[in-house]
Image 1 (cartoon, rainbow, N blue to C red):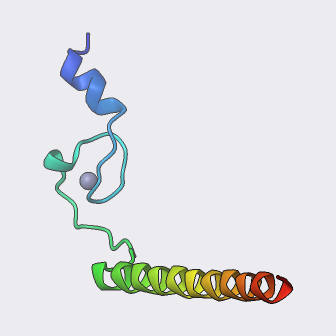
Image 2: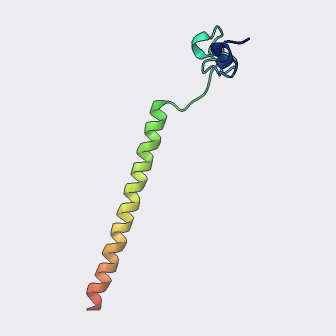
Image 3: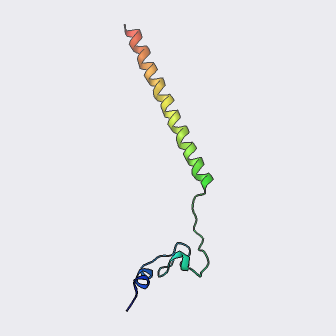
Length: 75
Ligand SMILES: [Zn+2]
């Protein structure tokens, strides 16, 4: 009969070598290289997104100003 711990380790997945059947702390294998975006890349992406939002806002502001000017002229 399996103990609770053994049963749990059967459906465990290691985050280190990504193999099933054991937990990360039980791992005796080498770490598998998993490509992930680095912190810097994430930061750059975020900055680009912020810049884009700012550009969109400026564009909107210009269009609102334009409409406002048209309204002023119409009076
Ligand atoms: Zn492992």
